[in-house]
Amino acid sequence: VLQNITINGSNIPLKLGKYLFMGAGSKIIGGGVIGDCVSIGVNTVVRNPNIPDNCVVYQDVCTGIITQRPNGKSVCYALRNYFKEDNL
Image (cartoon, rainbow, N blue to C red; front, side, top):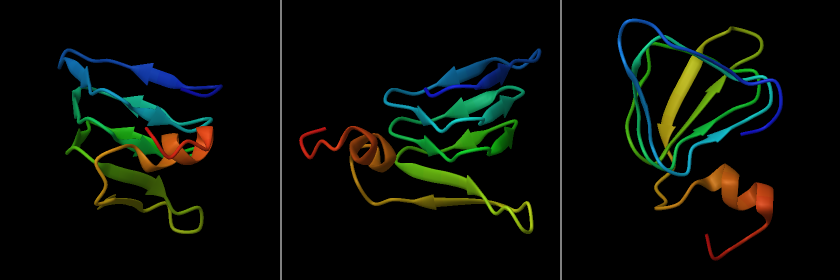
C-alpha cells in the first residue's frame, strides 16, 4: 500500500485478499471482495468491488473508464515490479 490511500467501508463488509497492491492515491469505496494478488493502479477509484484473483485494475485518465483484466500470473505483477523481485 503506497501513500494517500483511502479505504471507505459501508454496511456491506469489505474483504481484502492477500498480496493486494494499491498504487498511490487509489481508493476503495463501499463493500465487496477483492481477491488475492490484485493490483489497483495509481489514482484508481473502485466502487463496491468484486474483483477476482490475479487481476490488474486501472482507470483511464482520459475517459475515466475502469478496466479490469486478468494478468495471467500467480503473483501480483505490480508488486513484483515495484520491489524488482522475480521470486515473489
